[in-house]
Amino acid sequence: MKKNVGIIDKIIRISVVIIIAILYFTNLISGTLAIILAAVALIFVLTSFVGVCPLYLPFRLSTKK
Image (cartoon, rainbow, N blue to C red; front, side, top):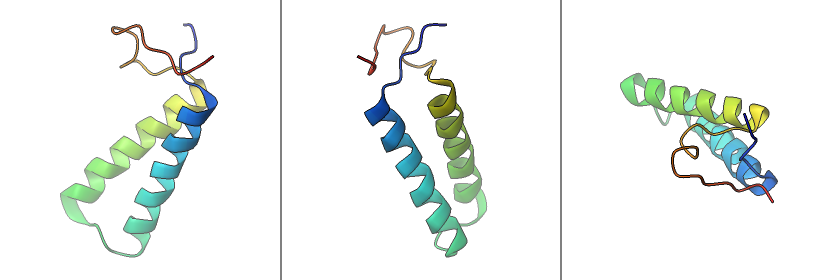
């Protein structure tokens, strides 16, 4: 697959993951919301490291130069 996630997009995704982790570990989120946000965080981490976002593919979007 062709990479479609640029460096700024990766930084934003990792920042969101860090914010979600902080909210979880400070007990500001819990229960179902915590599970949903953990799944989102996992997806963000995976797409950041792989460099491909499947949601960008149908729209032919790319944040990579």
